[in-house]
Picture 1 (cartoon, rainbow, N blue to C red):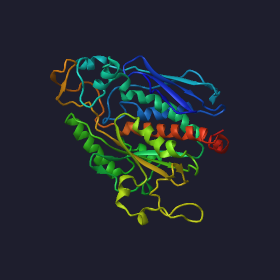
Picture 2: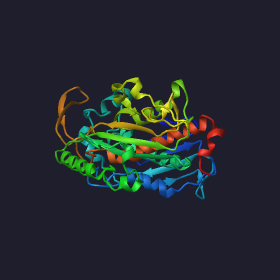
Picture 3: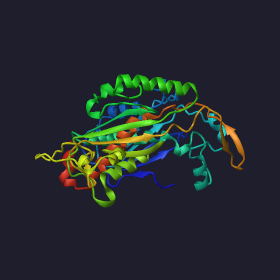
Picture 4: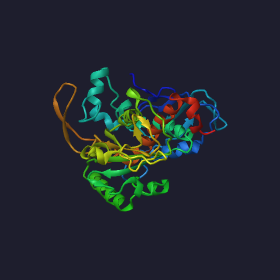
Length: 362
C-alpha cells in the first residue's frame, strides 16, 4: 500500500489499523534543539479522541502517545521521531455482520477491488482512527512554528451556520473549546447540538463545514505552478476522512462578483483593503490572514437499514452496529489544524531554509 507518507523535508510516515494492536508513525527531518511539550501533544489528542461528549462515538480510548525516539530531555535530537498510540477499546465483533458485505459509501468495496482483501474490523486502515497519528505529528509541527497561529472551528452543521465572519468571532481556544461542537458562537452552537442529538436519536448522521484561519504567516511562503500553497493545503484537507470539498478565500462565492469588486486593493504598507484572495496570491502567501473552509460529509455508517450487496453481488440489507459518530466535525477540528501545520512547516523548510528558519522556535 502506497500513500502513507506526507511531506517532502518534514516527512511523516504512519501505520496501523482501527482494530489492530496500535497505530504509530515516524517523523523524519525535524530540526534538532526544538523544545517539545508532550502535554501539548496530549491536549490535541484529547480533542480528537472518542468518547469526549455525548454527540460523538462512545468508544473509550485514552490515546496516550508513547514517544519512542527523537526527543531527549524534551528537545528534538534531529533523529527520526517515532511514536505509538495503543488501541485499548476496540470491539471487533461489532463488525462481524459486514465481513462479506459492503457498507454504502464506505471504502469496503474499493479496498477489496484494489487489494483483493480488506480488514473489515472498523474499516482497518481506511478508518478515521488513522488520523490519531496525524494529530501527533501535527501537534509537533505546531510547536515548531514561531508566532504563527492556526485556528479551526465548526462553522456549519447541516443547514445551521454561523452568520458572522471569522473576524467577528472570539476565536480564542477557550471560546472554541467551551462548545462540545467546537463552535465559538454560543447561540449557533446550541442549535447545532440540538440538531446533532436529533439526528443521532434517529440513527442517522449529519455533515457540515470547518473553517480554518492562519494568522501571522509572513508573505513569501509557497511555490509557483504545481506546488502552490493553496494546492498543498487543499491536498492535505482532502486527504482527511469524510472530506468532500475545499475552498479558500472567497471560494465559490467569489464567482458571483465582478473583478472590480473582487480585487484586493493595496495599501502602502503592503496590506490590502479586502481579503478575497484568502491570504494567497500566485500560490504564495501575501501576509494577510489565510482562511479556508472544508466540507465534511455525513458519516457513512448509520443505524438505519440500507440496501447493499455482498461479495457474491447479491442484494442484501444491513444496518450499522457498535459505536459511531453521528457528526464527525468536533473531532475533526484538531485534525484540520494538524494537517495545516504539517504543510506550513514543510514549506518553511524546503522553500528557503535560511530565509524562513526564524519562523521556527528555538
